[in-house]
Image (tube, rainbow, N blue to C red):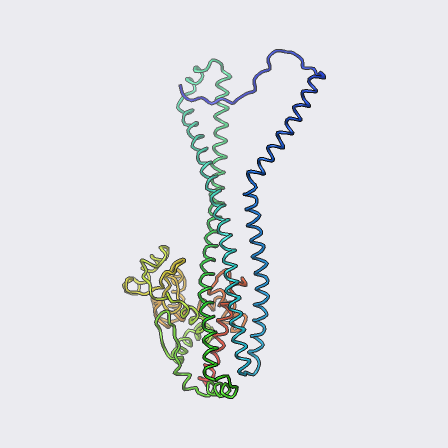
Length: 460
């Protein structure tokens, strides 16, 4: 006989005896209440005993978050103070003591920013743990709902195997038939509700996974920022040591050094502009011509463009030393092959950035574009340069692509604030306004200032 469905109904009371309240029954009721209260207290105690570690763990995580945020706020206040001092120093006449103090301030600022990045990285990792836990709960709930759905569908299928005549004559009473029909209707309603719940859980789960992906991307950006900061720290110390060696601590020697740097336009033209990571080396004069080519088409200031490209390339020891099959994330590989096919290039022979200890590599050329990102800009680059298809390994195409991206984020306004914001978006995307990433924008603008001073002398 096929599996049946019955809606449970309460059992009928036996007999018609009336229930009266007596003093004995009242006493028993009080005893029951006391007993219930005692067992209730025991139950609550057991719950607290068993789950105290979990509650304490949750409290510890929240305390850690609060502690991290407090420390971050204190560090940010110190960083802002150093930024103000460095900014004031740049507007004053240069002296040796002042320059050494400025280099020391920059070094201290970078040390604080490295610490700040480490704390934000810990915050992000905590958020990733929380989000992963939430995803686990959603997946468990989804599996449970799926199991219920299988049971409901199995019940409907088995019910459908019997025709109405068989169903009627298989029961002793007609009411039993209607009970089964009502049960089927209930199961169908629950099936629909379960399907709706599964759809909702899947949507929530996808949203949680997207959020987790964004958190993980932020973690990679923070680790990239740490590499830039560590190199900047080494650079500050090197500059200080070089300055002390050249001047031997004498103000007069420092002023002569400044005068020489300002007066020799010929030497500046010959000065090398290096994009170490991609193996490009050219004079500053040559680099300016490529930057001017892109600037004339996008409105981005040449010195600013050169600063961004140098920052993107020079800090990365992994740039240009990888292969697409090994170092590029799978989602970019199809786009990479498409780019190489359009340019009649062998993908196996084209350099890309090597995968670091975290995340993926696969960035291409002087501007360090990922393949999928390049495809979004190549038509505009082709229109501006006349190279169709453009190549991410061609200097003019790469410079123009970077300039287009920076221009779309406001760099063509050529103001300090607009360029700083464009540099931040170039590096951090939607996270550009987070204080931990300020270092990147500041370092680009400082480098742009130095390059602009050199270009002003060279172009006189």
